[in-house]
Length: 388
Image (cartoon, rainbow, N blue to C red; front, side, top):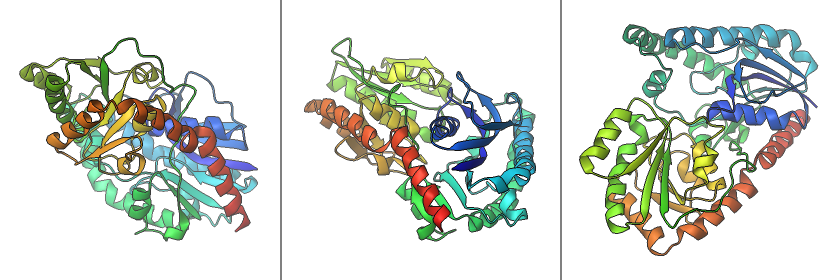
């Protein structure tokens, strides 16, 4: 079987979580099963992927937010110019990532391709303003221009998105919530739920070195991630359970405010700073309870990585989190409620239930979320669309 990933992603990396790592995992594992050609914006990996053929747009990303927006736009054109020349030789064309309500693919819009077209994994939408700020620029004028361009361009890109999704044979969503959301654009019969995978050889439990109950949170420090809620909840938890400690992995715009909150409360919190995705497993496998407190969470890759590491999960009942977390692996709490978050953490500590929940988490990941399982689902889907 010959498969073209067009595009695989603008940014493919095993050093950063979520979409860059999803793309890396898909490529790394899929190339062992099919003859794979990929079109990539830029790649930053520790190990070369070595596909049958790789087309790479840029050597590296820009640190300038405005230039990144322009580069991403040009990457869509680059993807079209390459794919229009080579698509006929493939059995399946798969637009992997990025895919949201402002993503599109020029190949099916400008060509009658007569080839199976698969799109995804598509997530629930997140907060565009926060994502724009996450592009990373300290130049205030540049950042304001970037935001303005995003606002005025999104209506047009959304139009192209609707045209693109209408051309696909199958849309892959990361969660049931995502399937429900995207069904307003495409029939549910054409949507399949296949979550991203996790490297279960890298993310795995380790022996704990002390008797402390270690609670962990991780992510980019944005308002909607609600690390402030986690810190306030831990302040209460630590008064009830003295053998608890909190580690927060990451960095971002809210870091100064969060550290000030810790100081004001007089509670001890360990901030690790930014850790490359290829090293984060060394922190996760030290933990007992993982808390994901976001108000908005399209999927939450770090959640399944924490589960693979043998941690019990406490998650807000929103987005893709509620599709992953149930009472067998942890607890869901009412989004935004500190008191309910405290109650759920207390519940699994009181009964030392977090140990069994952590074991269940690991088993669930091995059964449902390992890359081997996920890629076999991709292959099955490819074969199904080829028959049609």
